[in-house]
Image 1: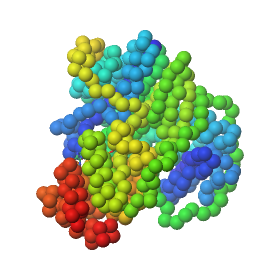
Image 2: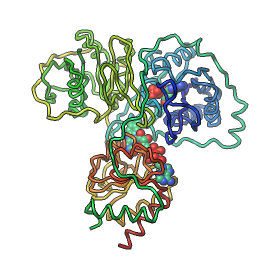
Image 3: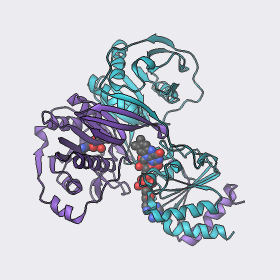
Length: 257
Length: 305
Ligand SMILES: Cc1cc2nc3c(=O)[nH]c(=O)nc-3n(C[C@H](O)[C@H](O)[C@H](O)COP(=O)(O)OP(=O)(O)OC[C@H]3O[C@@H](n4cnc5c(N)ncnc54)[C@H](O)[C@@H]3O)c2cc1C
Ligand SMILES: Nc1ncnc2c1ncn2[C@@H]1O[C@H](COP(=O)(O)O)[C@@H](O)[C@H]1O
């Protein structure tokens, strides 16, 4: 069985963001980077599937600059067999359709039985790439899954809907699924596995060989939203802060009366 | 401009988000038509043409068939924009339609500015103005971003549509959300734990503050996904929607899906080390502090009152 998992490297969302000089994306200097949270579930599910079927080859793919290799190594340490880095310093400027086009171009004719992606990326969050890849490859896709099982060439999933309701959806492989938070418990790479991962194949391919589609949209501007709340911001030592808050709760709410 | 609105139907009911689609069309000053895979017995209050496919015949969840039905309607109506809710139905079907139409898709639109669309970036810390470059654009709208001042009126002119074929996905029915246990909607005070609590042992600290305030404790999704708190206590789009007198968000960043479940609370206090956390936008008071120090201190002082 051949499995592909697509991951993205994103900044820590607690970072202090600045708008880049281009005015169309955030400044990437001085940020801490990590694996897109949704993709951790995708990697874990792909590794579990590999463990289940035994005879499987699991590729992790990531489009981005040199630095994304760090995140790819984590996926290798979690259990992926090989890495395909699609080298693109300008990946942040690409829109979801282009990212999907690159992935589909790579995956076409490679015979992947299952492709895993996250349901969305935390920074751009378009929730498009996975479904688009499947459409471009003309294979079935199931989005937002919180449960996954595979048996005899069929997958059964639970899709998460609003309010915690789930829909049971089945299909045959080849197929693509997009992974939602809580699908499984992503493993922490162990030290021996981190060491082993260093020896795994990690090839870089130039993006120009795979980018065959044009952008269908462009970013005009990136900006900070106006602060609307106008709520009170309290800072200082915890003791006086707690006293202040109690005072406010007494005045503004009935709960401490 | 002509817009096609894609309404949603689930388990025999038309979803209320249809009003947000109508509000969006109004805001765009656009002529509109609507598409729905639903039923005669649950029609939207909408004064326009409704292309209606029968959910009983083609399946409530059947993306391949819904895609074909919708593409047929798009061919008839030739809309410049096809608008979905950014929901489990919308974000699943929209890319399928965009791909078939070779159209740009702009996801989770929160506002419009001329012909540009505004979407959130990085957990709503930033925003992006996006310009589609294609003749047709597919759009999904963030839940709650567009609202109507008054309930819509009118009844649609129904145009029935049908499809052949079955599709590649097999829908095996719904599984209800977990039932029973704590009913957060009845609590007057809710203290919620977010990922900022750091470890499961710290749930006790949040529960103790809730108890001191004679309320219940809740949680954000990562805390539930990690198994630290049971799902029944999750607040947000895929958990419960609450509106207590007081909501205390401890170590919660304020993602849209969490806000959707608690922003109607009467008074909101957030405790967060990040002064820029989006929760600050809805909080009446933002306490910039480490919850591990602040929460026990607050609990102690409240107990001493
Ligand atoms: C379809 C969908 C449905 C979803 N449904 C829900 C839902 O129902 N409910 C829900 O909650 N989420 C839901 N989510 C997830 C949501 O997008 C966010 O990922 C989630 O709400 C983040 O939870 P959090 O704020 O606890 O964690 P984070 O976003 O990681 O935030 C942690 C916060 O804690 C702060 N912090 C860290 N340390 C401390 C400290 N010592 N003291 C004080 N503050 C600290 C940080 O500054 C940060 O702001 C959904 C997502 C999707 C895609
Ligand atoms: N640069 C990238 N490289 C590899 N996979 C990506 C990239 N960007 C997005 N993806 C995948 O597509 C999913 C959805 O992303 P998005 O459509 O941007 O929200 C992510 O969770 C990843 O699995």
